Image (cartoon, rainbow, N blue to C red; front, side):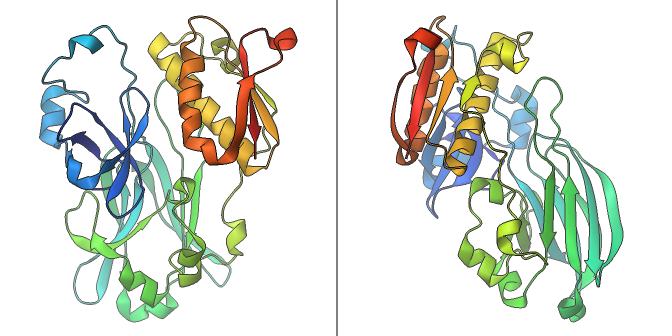
Length: 320
């Protein structure tokens, strides 16, 4: 089971995309309503590719009458980009780029040694595909150059802007050998490195010290911090430029923008941030309050913002 895989719960009707690993036994799954729920791995089964082809991305074997008229927000896998090495023979390793997401990724692979850059591969990775792009000799491991992967994260249609993916990788023998496991999508053993792991917060200080991912720059410079956020964020569709989208997609994009701005405020130690959600039917406000449970360790309290300024259509979040 890997990030980006579609899974279904054994004892219920929940189905979604694996978005992160909580522990060795637990994973986080984003279901079709946009919620992220922890599951034990033993409670989940992979949805086969054959089933997806036959019934589509969201099969519903038994229709739940309570959800019959409820709009479904599509779930897209946006995490699960890997670089992996597999053995061609005892000495030669084949290098693969793996895209286990629903995004299309124009990608460049190059190497750098003694200040000289060499282009290795340029091309596109369609969703749920992989590409063999290079070979390296294990006998020359100590002389391997710095590998540089650059990619653009593209989703057709209305979406959110995504920062380009840029990773510089320098391997140490001990950490390299410890990375051996089954390669996502290839179904064989290899040495696997997740390229979008930093955004999930899974690349900790110990991993950097052990040399799983290193750069010729200090470790703290490898992780690009989000831009300083505003203190007031308007979530109206018009303000976000998505007023022409379907209602089910508008809510999903509003929540994505809310989480992005809240996480940026937390990262920059902002004292507070206000989100203008409007009044309407109150659905967006309810969804925001549900999402705030994920961030409770960073939140001191939240309340309705100044009524004289925003009316009843805004929420102020006081951060710790």
